[in-house]
Amino acid sequence: MHFTSVPLYISGLLIFSLTSFGTLVNAAVSDPYVPNDLPCPSGSHVSFNQNKYAFIAPPHKFVDLTKDFFNLTWYGNIALVVNTTGTDNVPGATRAGIFSGAHYNETLTMYAKHPDILTWSYYGAPITFTLPGEPTLVSFGYTETFRIQSICNGQATYIDVLTQSCSGNQIDNYNIWYTFHDSVFPKIAATFGAPVLAGDCPDS
Image (tube, rainbow, N blue to C red; front, side):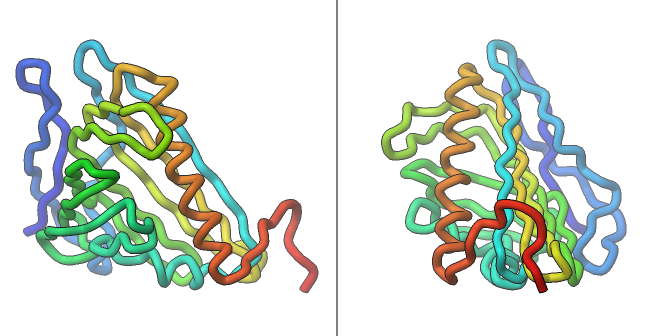
């Protein structure tokens, strides 16, 4: 039996209760599906942002780095995993550690890997953190969904990140999550010289 965290409220506080998963399909996809919508506590608001990228490089370049939920080294020195529970890449697994000096705790809720696409989602418990050069953000819980997909018959890769987070400041919330992800994927692409795909697919 596998478990995941589902946000609930008690006395106005966002908490995470354990809900059992049903049968796993291909040891990677959870059933029943766990939604990513966030109910936010009183006095806070949900904020949504999307980062999206396209690079001229085969998808395995990005998938090989990011495919393991228990590994965050591709985030750089800003994130560290110090504790895990469950089985890597199986919904219900958790990871905890340090993110920009703050303690985080995240639970994998969906993971699906196919030859042409990798996608995963997770819940994050409330966290207060400060990115370099940014104001401190108080998040009362968040969800993120990542997608890394082959395009142009494998010549290029499309990446998007969908983040929903509860906070008392929607502008800071949007800007900080966007800025963080925007500092990650272009740097990864630069490590193997992948240029931005600015238009249509490159000539074969």
